Picture 1 (cartoon, rainbow, N blue to C red):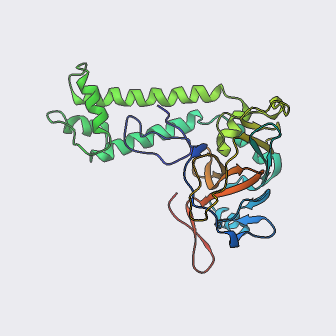
Picture 2 (tube, one colour):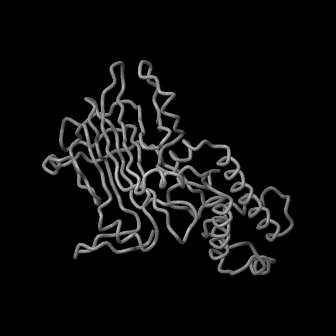
Picture 3 (cartoon, one colour):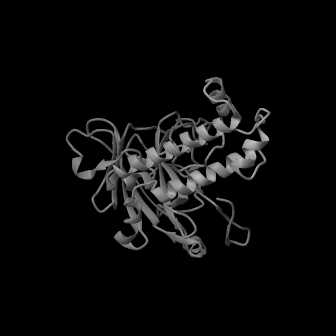
Length: 312
């Protein structure tokens, strides 16, 4: 089970699994040809656009200023350039713009999750578990279900029944303790795995890229698919199969590899970073970059043009 990740938590299953979706495949609506900015600069919220060889994607200044009350946006913009490789496949090179230069790259190189993040996440998970059974403490759960079966439809009951079916536990209190122990062990395992990861892997994880390698290992004469990150974390090279634009404007994009770049936000009230915004990118045949989707998380632009904080 993967407990930590960069997307929303689900209450169902053993630990309300957090899944990381750094790369994905899916169907996307074709872009609107008339909306392509001539200068190639996009700001959130992103419009639908045609693929082009180079894009610059920025978090607007007014959103950065609005978010300052809660923390610091570590990545403010990125330039993306695509190319078609000589042998086969495509590549896109991203130049990441950190708000304060290399200073803002340092937090992204830290192992994720840290012990403090794991402890906080474990506490939140246990609180959700207890709330789902309408109790405040473990002792209340143990007393409430001393002589009855835990309620169904909570998102946790199915996993508890799997424990009970093993025939190893005499009471539901024993089952609850075993479940909590398993979740704690899973969090701890992820902390230990994170501690063994390299700085490049940590930066890639925080920016949304799965299993990146040092850029120094990239061989232009024999390119291998994957993500490569430079030592200063400013340059990211993504090598992938070329996608293609549908010939009919009414068609959807076919399934293909897409990479989601996160704009990390260092929030004062929480450990680690979260994504203030994200954008899904791929490279189409001919070496052009397609901007598939782009979202701001937890903020909305009101009719008056101001950014307001919502639910993250």
